Length: 593
Image (cartoon, rainbow, N blue to C red):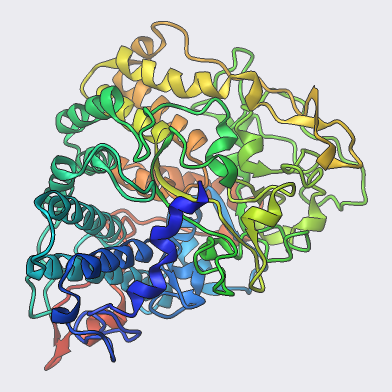
């Protein structure tokens, strides 16, 4: 399976041919020093290599650091900082003084000078630049068949649609630069949604159902993205139409009919990735011969339990609020309105040398594939010891994140120890089929089709309820690699909603149930903040979280989300300065900053 990832392994080749990339902030304007001229590579081989380079920018990494300079994690494609930490499902973690720029993002006190925003902006526009170079070169190349020309343009426009989608949901009003742009000092005074739609629609209409390499986008990945773009704009009828097609006819790039994997964990294991649930994923590779982890989840390198077999660094700790969300009632259903009234027992303030018994009340088993907690098997690494694996429990709580962790048994293949912190070959799945089902449920509910919305949600919950999704105790606690017993590690109880349940909730209650299911299913996958914003619930949910979590932990105490300002991050001051002439910039700052 890993051999299919060659399209990203060739990034170094493509990098030597980039026409519009450099390490400076004004990379959109200046060609790379020593770059090959367009007439030399204006052929099919050259265009394909340029396209590989456009894919390679997906991970925001390169040459051992963020692809255009800055901390590797600042441009992480998982959006663990901008989507999960800012969304209230994770603390920054580590120690309070480490990476303080993240603290200000988590507390919504950042200003435009925060360098993290500039790094993310540059990494995304690097991707835009590469896709534009492909499209411009494609126009000049004469030795490409019509079929290949159509496919290449579809892939390039899909990627450009992705990069601009990320920019849109991060910063809202951003300048549109395409392959015809010659003056790169463009204002950010237009809504770019129509252009994103056009790119994704073209990709959907022109890409094949399957691809020769699994890492390439296909027709159905583009369709899922287009449906998501409609959903973000509250175009529910259009979104439903697209999601119906994806659900009924969609297949992966390697030809698998879309479906949910029986085992939830298979979405987060390099040995089982590129499966039927993977709609579009950034292909990661371990031990690629570069001596770096740039192609191996470098953006997540901080996010392993501290003082553990992973060495570093204790960031990205799930919140107590998130863990409490997985509590279920006697019927196996979530507490939609008052989950924090029945909190999970945790070991905050309890040293690892002291006795501790984990929570014994019912929980959704997805909890223990998402959150590492004391006394519960941490994959096959042994039971999580609690405080011993937490760098500073007093500021960020008792939990560790789990979905990006590689297994001990297969670490020689899928882990990469080339850097001071680990890398891994676990793909970053940007859209998986469970996400599609829940987006489709949302569109159906908004249109009043509550029974169909319930059917989609129940498909996700039914998977969670399968016996193989429980976490089991070790057969031999002293030898985790010996395997697991038939004894569940906790009191797991999750069920589908009974017939007619959503009809009884009504439209608003149904939407709340769907929103909560997204919180459970997609936890720590970088969606939460952006979901809250598009639902118009960010102030309500985040300020409630700050009040609850802040009473326990100091790192978010006193934080406040301000409606009308904090829905989007500030336009980086560096970019405004670069486009300033005579005291006037072509870029306009977002409101409130």
